[in-house]
Length: 372
Image (cartoon, rainbow, N blue to C red; front, side, top):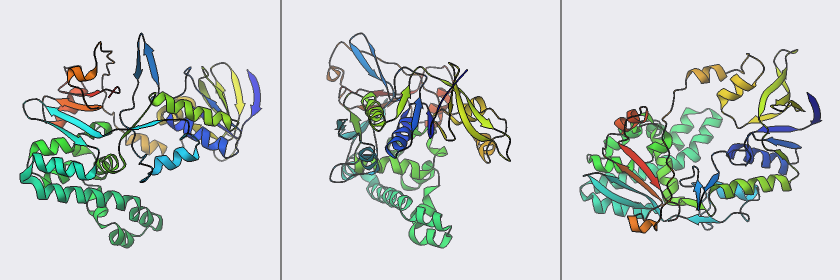
């Protein structure tokens, strides 16, 4: 075992969170070491090459960027991290296409006004419900960003009801209950709930504010992709980190977070890698899962307050089988004109979730085509 130099902070894992944390620390003047067990940065934000094809691993649509005229939080963060001039973002002009066999085939544009017009055109009998629903989405989302946070900070129920009335009344209701309240057409409800699969639970098990947030963010601030895929963003974050004086090691998995147990509470003092190297630090940011971090890496059974309770409240999420396909023809030859297409044989989201927990043939799938 070799003892090496001391760092202000060590970041475990070069996924999105790890890269962002590391770049922020280094640009803020902290002597920072980033350790990654893979041989490239990015975690889920990576790509890989097979033959003539380069495949995007995970990124479907990037939200939160906004436009130059109407910027949103991610554009501000990317500017602060020094990556906006290193990455080319490509605006998508559709939210998604959704097709349910023998039911409907509808494409929603990436425009809040356009979404409303397409919905009313396809479901004229639901016009008032569509207008009311979209207005509620807008109010709940804006209140969650502004009034709710202020009320939470002040711990004031009166302030919450005064400044975030719609969020307080509807935000934490199930998405299904709000959809049912506004619409009678099952096709319309299925179409509007399409993003539930990004959240991993059927509409009856997700908060309305989460669905509203996705619809509003993509509709108003647009969905984006990245030229070169998410790997280009990961590379840019790493470059920014290194320019700020950060240090990185790949093929260097951390196998233990070492603590000093002599005081009242264990205190982090170092990390140990699979190669036997020890790096002294009093600050560790882990981009590994919380279970791996606290159960597998931490050298003490004494978990921080609240962590045990948090673990007890968790459930196993959905799991999907991902197939990467290289085509010998342009996508439009197959009728693929949108980057994101949800396809199914049923409108029963609960059945979709149940099927995802088995090895049975799927009743729904998602097709993403980045060439578009």
